[in-house]
Amino acid sequence: MLSRRASLFLIAPAVVLLGLLFLYPLSYSLIWAFSDEDLGGWGLQNFIKAWGLYSWDVLFTLIIVTLSTLIIGAMSVAIGGYLTLGENRVALTVLRTLYRWPLFIPFVVSAQLMRTFLAKNGMMNNIITSTGLMDPLAAASFLDWRGIVITFVWKQTPFVALLVAGAMAALDRSTIEAARNLGAGRLRILLGIVVPQVGTTLMVGLILSYVVMMSVLSVPLMINAQTPTMITVDMAWRINAYSDYGVANALGFITYAMTAVIAWIYLRQGVREGGRPQ
Image (cartoon, rainbow, N blue to C red; front, side):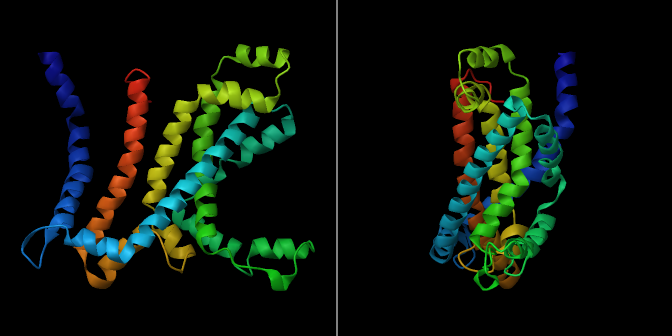
């Protein structure tokens, strides 16, 4: 009994912080989302209004985040695979040194960097035109949905790649060497032997990246000045311009639902593997 009380005492600070910083704001947001100030009761008016005004933005957000997640997964596997199976020492050293840098840059700084890099007269187009590969008049701005995807991929790939590369480095090398002795190429070894063994780690990294990208405001706000835009921009607009917390919280509830689907897939996979999600 004393041991049980001591355990509860030790986890009490974490539980209190979880309640104050997550459960309380979540409950408050849900109450605002379902409350109808005009009727003085409860209803779905906020959701109807939010869907009527921002349904294309919801779809846009889902497409952007899903596309970014898929690209992040592919690039993370490629980076981790080369770090594990690559043989060029110079290339390995350069890759190990460079791929982690975006991990330490905040999203707001990343967005500002991409504004100067992807603009019509930005660094990317200037480099291409200086090499003669493109006429200066043909330069185009990438400050649209493409810029959002590029920023998300550039920012989140190091995080997932770090997890995947660590999991790949911990694998038993005997299976890889056996496959090499049987004549398997590096791509076949990567996709057929290495990736299946680090699938859970890859899934965890992608889920965390998906949730993070879903909640980012600075990137779509600073890069994409067009419509449709992401839900976070709509939420900020409803609060700052109209003080409409009901619709803003309804949009927030929609993002909860979109991330809950991903979390459910992850938990279900953990149950299938023995009830131990990583």
